[in-house]
Length: 292
Image (cartoon, rainbow, N blue to C red; front, top):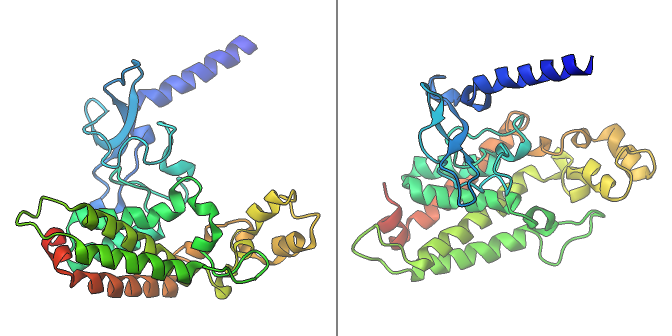
């Protein structure tokens, strides 16, 4: 019986890997369903182990045509991780970054205004990075104005927006304007990075509010907070019991950020982001280096 089970399992695995790239591929709905993207081995690293990069798949034979544009560690140190292990809520059609509220709102809006792909990516990546970088998402004051008990932070989300926005604008204004748009000043890159981070704080103001049951870290992700309190099932602490019974975010901490559930706030987020990106678009250095 055991031998039969092992053989069946091995056969199943072989069938899966026979399809190789398509099994790991992800269609981009905006591309007519034709291009496929997936993980397949690229040249081995120094130690001889293949790196499974994410990029366009060449149908015959199935292989990745080029390395992922975002770099091999974009989804984490695990080289085989796909969209940070959350394919239900995230996609990665071009191998650059998992497409979330922050990245999508910033990148698409920047391109619409007239930013080139390089600048739009810098802005969007640093924006999304406030959620994705190791440890950053744990700094609740980056995302909320109040703590788990509803007490205001000394410098919460709105404070961090102003701090990073002002610093970003200052760096962009002090950046050198070279004759060649291909030469980037360090202040320009740093300035765009600060602007991207500031946009994250501003965008959170639309998603992390009382109407979404997400005004505090506890309201936004009660099951996560309760797990840290030793009550991941919501059966011990009264706050956890009440949250499990009444807060829809208990079963889906990402719910407050989903544009299909909160379309009005998504539209407000994009509108506000567009206004802010148009403001820095007037800075000469940005015009010089970021224009398409």
